[in-house]
Image (tube, helix red, strand yellow):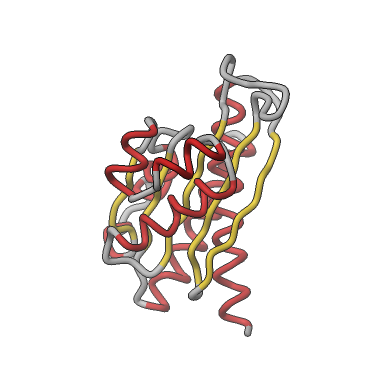
Length: 168
């Protein structure tokens, strides 16, 4: 098991515990990871008790049609942006019977990057504890490495946010 795989498995197990304690369900909204976050969640036996659904919204049309991301937001900021990640996370929450969501949109490579958004740029959105949180990260490596790092960060940060809400 690679370092990222072990980290992801630990994050999923921790998330499962937190979500089960709260009787809460999770949805994912994924672009650059193409369902890898949902896959990591459902790798854990019993995940149906806390994982509701995953939206794979690779195209801009899918982001709009499935999550309600305004086309004007995508046109103004680009698909890889804070407003789109926020809208994806909030859209997943609105379009599924869940209490938490995680969204990712990024440039996994090897092509598609620009000076402003180089390969490895990923925007994240989380809805947890009644609020929406966003972050941007720049990951190094090839497409596989960027996607693995994205999954690991998305899950570990959701775990951190849920624990923070729990502590308050």
